[in-house]
Length: 580
Image (cartoon, rainbow, N blue to C red):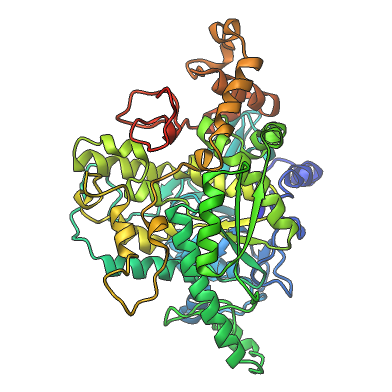
């Protein structure tokens, strides 16, 4: 991940520049490798870079075209950049081997439709000097975090940033930039460019289930996300989703390693080849992956309290796959000490997000310290397949499907936000194969009757079945049976049940009954309903003004009568609370 800060149409941009650089510095943790800024007319773009593709040369941003009339700051990864280079209608001379540079020629050819051609995760701000026009866009699901702000003292200006902490010192109105949308300063309008077939939650999907297509599309999605010139790893909780991603990644890593050994001594690509995408990391026309950096082994990582369910399962998976596994244990004290920092980086007071982000935040620091810059993660699967335990309560397939679509649409305020910010806090990038556009097109269109949880079919049955090779004696199994068919653990539960219990106990200590009866007037109707939620809101308020609260969404389960969002609080859970 990288960090962006930009302001379009500032009344005195030269005078504002020191402030802009200071605000940009607030997200330097996202991009510790290099900083850059460009002023053009009354617009400034700042960028904090984390180099993963185009590492060796000047992939530093903001990027510009030949006559520097277009300036671009991007946070993200474009997996199909090689294909885009090759199929541009007008030849374009690329200055760098950065995957993100393709956005400039796409804008020149397609204008506001440019993001439709991108396959990846991204948020970007592009300034067109000739037209004095700024456009900004965010990837279809909102895997990268992105915000837009306005200052009432400067009605003509508009601000963009990767995190709230860049905006609140200068903006009094801030909103989460909607995923799958593009903003155009010429009209001051934000319009949706992402229009998949499954978007309407009231239109129940009808496609028949094809397990082979489901499996192959996820495999392709994981392969794309191994595009890197730096060491990478996988987050492995021992649950189904991260284990499947790790299994596919390990197969691909071993395949690439073999290819690399065979291809040693190939000639260096020439500039014409680079302009057409030859010799660069990424997916080519045949959906084959080219990558430049190889670790002797795929590194996998898990975290939990001593004796946690996740660490035990993750070790078993790692041993089965042959990854180089790193187990991190943390103490409850470690987690509690990090809470305020976690809320500062996460920019939320949602209970579920904070519970799950704290171990992920601690683990990310360890991973970055090992020299790894990118990890694959399993976010999105539970939303797509109705994997949360509360989906047991869905009364029919129509409501099941509607809830899945709503959850996917809200991922940018929940699990995507958690995965992005808890890793970016330490300059680590998380990539999420389940949220690939093509995989979503396949998985979200499956008749939801196939996803429904019954006595015969546990949660995410079809995903498990797609990777079950037990009926093919010649096939290499993806996972051990007991992992492939292990019940869902929400991450905040799986790291060790004592974690949530201790958070609740500490909240009792910090928040009195009297405080619960008298919430802050500025909170309006957004009143915390538990002492834990109240405690997090107080910590959030220490870091952020009230103008930031509108970007927060609370995660709550449906069809169950409970205020606690933990999966373990749901009666169906096999290791539920004793008093549930």
